Image 1 (cartoon, helix red, strand yellow):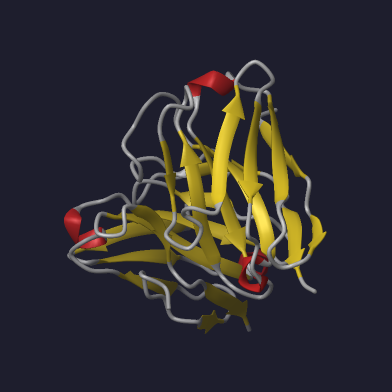
Image 2 (image 1 turned 45 degrees about the vertical axis):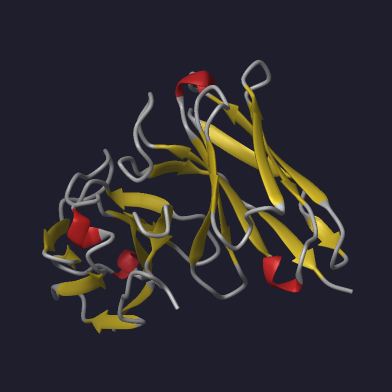
Length: 125
Length: 111
């Protein structure tokens, strides 16, 4: 079935870096836009970043712009989130999510599906 | 503070109908950007419930429906079931922020 699986979470000190990975399976990976969404403990959902099919277009939320970098490797069916200068308020479960429809669409047209199970990032000294 | 405003909680007895509102503004819902709804069961990842206002993925019961009016959208659960206890999020796009935006989430309790 179509699924995405995150990995790479853990405990990291403020100011340090961490890279999350997401492995996709069960669908034509290169045909889909991919996202990262996060959820702080006990809080709501926050969109983080998006990368388009060939990796040429990337967009970020204001809260992570300049610190986080999204990338993808279509040959490996993977996306990544390089997180630098981590802050305490970056503590969250990070979900890898696929665009609900294949192809290129403006941001927001499509829904987000499927979601991975999430990987927890804790930023603490 | 979320860009899209949802009530923090809604409750109802089994069989009752409930409505969850999602209020935005002229830069998101009011600008005709699509609204999607997600259900998050306790301890689980969110899953899409309705996409593009009122389209149900396969497997989602038809007691879930959605609509839009002006700068707001609504999710209606008709005939509430115990398994509907979850947190529900609306999601759209904001042209001023150039980002996807979510509502703060609504916790549904079945009494």
